[in-house]
Amino acid sequence: MIRTTLLAAALLTLAAPALAQTTPTADEVRVRRLLDRTPLIDGHNDLPWALRQNFRNDPHALDLTTNQSANRLHTDIPRLRAGGVGAQFWSVYVPASMTPLEAARATFEQIDTVKRLVAAHPDVFELATTADDIARIHRAGKIASLIGMEGGYSIADSLGLLREFHDAGARYMTLTHSTTTTWADSATDAPKWGGLSPFGEQVVKEMNRLGMMVDLSHVSEETMLDALRVSDAPVIFSHSSARAVTDHPRDVPDSVLRLMAEDGGVVMVTFVPAFVSEKVRQWGANRAGEEARLRSLNPGAPQAVTEGLRAWVQANPQPTASIADVADHVDHVRRIAGIDHVGLGGDFDGVGSLPVGLEGVDAYPALLAELARRGWSDADLRKLAGENMLRVMRAVEAVAKAKAAERPNLATIG
View 1 (cartoon, one colour):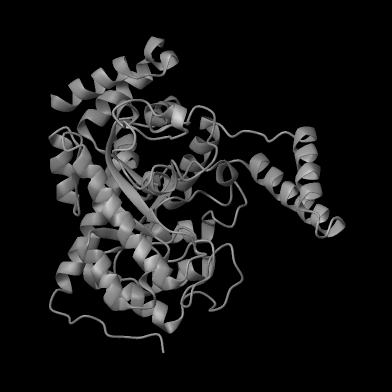
View 2 (cartoon, rainbow, N blue to C red):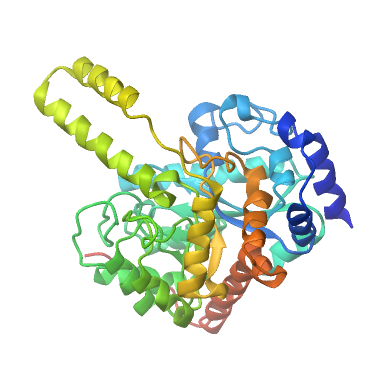
């Protein structure tokens, strides 16, 4: 089988010596065989933004056919192969600090980056826009490459722009990022709308008509509930974990997890340390408090703040998260939402640190092996890896097909 050969070769040639010298456990062998048949679909990877920030937006500026750990990247082709990744949603992220029109331009540029990345390695990647595309590309031994928008401000309050992004290949949009937009409340900013504004509801409806998945990572609980109420298609969380396990506002509360079975959507558990480890989350909160204290004591003296914060960190080293922490979140989502509603969204190359043992995209077999040791069946692991996401995509596509005769939504924010 093509994919078996490719995965085995990647595992033997991976640049990290420790991985090359370690004999796989029985659970790891079981997982790798499973990933030969089932595409592992990751919901969120920020490599395009890393290319923009550090490599002049040029996928040819570095050799992705070799291990890129030395360039502080989490993603490259050998590690994607070793990780058994069958489909990747590449995030076309832009910062919330941009104006909406700046964000729209930068998002289109990021979509161009994804397409140039795929074109640079046609033997490895192929663009995909449907669930059937993913299945076909995986069977051919390639990595299906999809586009996910991160931050609804990129549409600049224009449903026409939303349609253009969809035509360009975007297949989900995260309604907000770190700040509340002109039509939706963020999880990490002051609320303005109590969830979705009336225009925000129209955005969700038009996404349903187009066949673009509604991504609720980053949004407030009220926005989650409004979107679940308004959407005719299942929703996703492309990179979020469980708030009952780690009390971070970016995570999904049990009240929403319980609704996922009725909605049919999927929560793709992320690996961000502050979202999966309560110790890391609390350390970050304490660090922020210390920084605020230092700023109040040293107005107009940023160097004093920097030095004081450095001393605090030396006295209070940052704790680490682990594979077990991430597995705890996966287990919790499964327990509350159900096995049909959990997936994986690592957020690689979008964070400065990762859990120990999950430092790169090659680590998915280790996480799945941890779950196998906890008693997960092959059927459950296949659902987590990719089958749940394929089902959601097909449901979203079916809703769009049913709405094909509807005219484009001409709602405006005013």
